[in-house]
Length: 527
Ligand SMILES: NC(=O)c1ccc[n+]([C@@H]2O[C@H](COP(=O)([O-])OP(=O)(O)OC[C@H]3O[C@@H](n4cnc5c(N)ncnc54)[C@H](O)[C@@H]3O)[C@@H](O)[C@H]2O)c1
Ligand SMILES: N[C@@H](CCC=O)C(=O)O
Image (cartoon, rainbow, N blue to C red; front, side, top):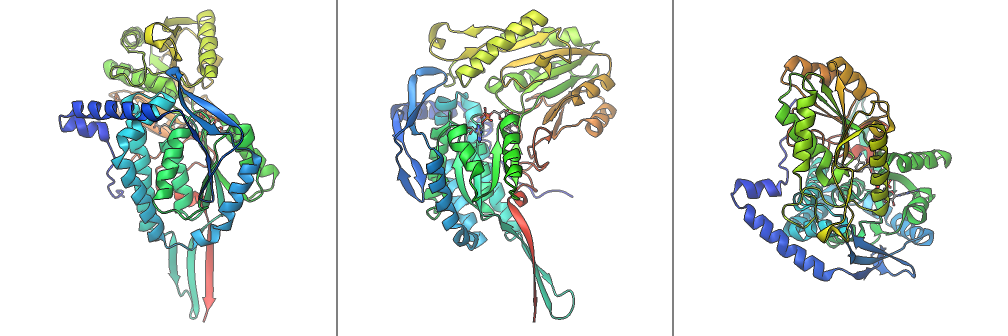
C-alpha cells in the first residue's frame, strides 16, 4: 500500500533547484550577524506560562569560539521540576478536552512561524551547537516536518477516536486512544531543534501536557522553539520549560510521581537508566527512548567504489560524527579494500575543518571538553593498536584557537572485536575492516548491541535483497552516496533503532510514533 505523499521542507535543495544558492548564503550570513549581536542574555524557566528566575545559572559558550557567550541559563532543580509538573498536571484534563482540530491549528501555526524565521533559527543552531549552515538548516527543516506530519496524522485519524458501531443491538461502542497525563521530554544536544520539537509536539498533539528539559549545551534554540509553540496558542501550563543538567533537572523529572511517561533521546546509558527508574517506581507509562548507534556499512566487490567513498565520508564526518546515525565502521570486500581505503583517506584530507558559520566548513567543532578528551583518548588508542590513516589531531591554528576542532579520522588494522569498532564514540572517527564476502560483512554488521542505521554499497540486486532481509537495523540504506547512514526524512524514512538503539521499536517521523504517547480505551454504552 502506498503512503499518502508528504512534502518535506528541503530548504537548501530549494535554493539549489531555483539556481539561487547565493541567496541562501546571504540570508544565512545576515542572520548570523543578527543572532550573534543578541547573544549573552540571561534566560529564565517557563512554568505555568510565567517566566521564573532562579538563583543559580549556567553559562553556555559557542563550541567554535569559547570566548563567545551564548547566554546564561537558569539552573533548574527538583523544586522547579515539582512546580512545573504541578502546573502541567493542573491543566491536563483541560488540554485533553481540546478538540483535535484546535490542537493541530496551534502546531501548524508554530510550523509557519518556524518557516518564516528559518534563517534565524539555523544561525542560532550554528552558534550554539556548532552545526555548519546546511546541517543547521536541515535541523530546522526536520522540526517543521515533524510539526506538519504529526499534525496531519492527528487530523487524519480524527485524534485516534473511532466510532466502532453497534456490534449487538443496543451496545454503542467507541474505541479511542487517550493521553497518559504529564510527559517529561528530555532532549539531546545534537539535533537541538528537530528532536526537541518533534518529541514535544508528539506528546502535546496527543493530548498530554509537558515538562521539557533540553540538553544543557543547547538551551537557547530549545527556548526559542518553546516560545514559538507557546505563542502559537498553547494554554498556560500545557508546555513548561526547565533548563538544567541531567542529575539536577532531568533525574527529578523522571522520578516525579506525577510524571506518567517520558520521551527521551540521548545516550544508551541514560535512556536505560530512565527505563530502570520507571520500573523500580512501578510506573506503567511509557519510556519512549531513542538511543545510540554503531552504524556499519558494507562495501561489496560489486560496489561503485566512488559512490561508497562519498557516502561513507559524508556519513562519518558530517556534523563531526555527532549523530546517532553516523557511519562508524566499514566492512570492505578485500577485492576493493585498498582502492576504497586510499580514496576515503584522500577525500577525508580534502575536507575543510572550521567554524560552523564559515561557508566552506564541512567538519565543524565538537560540542564539549569531554568530547575533545574522548577524541584524544580514542585516537591515541587507535595509533597504539592499529593504523591512523589520516586525522588523529586536535586543531588549534589560526581562527580555530578558541574552539574545539578535531581532524576527521580514518583508522585501519584494528580488529572488528576491538572497543574502537564496538563502542559509540560520537566523534568524526571511522574504522575500516577487510572482509572476504557479504556473509562476513552481514555477520560482523549484526555483531553489535546496537541496531540503528546500516548501509550497503553493491550494484548487485540479489546482494541488496539479501542484505535487506538479514541486516539487524532499523534504518537500512543501499547505495546512498548522499550519506551512507545519515539524513532520514520525516514520513518517507521514519527514524529509530532495534536492539539497544531504542526501547519501543517504533520510529520518530513515522506512522506508528504518536500512538505510543496514548493508551487505549474502549467505551460501551448500552441504550
Ligand atoms: N536514536 C536517536 O534517534 C538519537 C538521536 C540523537 C542522539 N542520540 C544519542 O544521543 C547521544 C548524544 O546526545 P547527548 O550527549 O545529549 O546524550 P545524553 O544522554 O548525555 O543527554 C541527553 C539528555 O539527557 C539528560 N540527562 C543526563 N543524565 C540524565 C539523568 N540521569 N536523568 C535524566 N536526564 C538526564 C541530559 O541533560 C540531556 O538533556 C548519543 O548516544 C546519540 O547516539 C540518539
Ligand atoms: N535523524 C538523524 C539522526 C538523529 C540522531 O542523531 C539522521 O537521520 O541522520
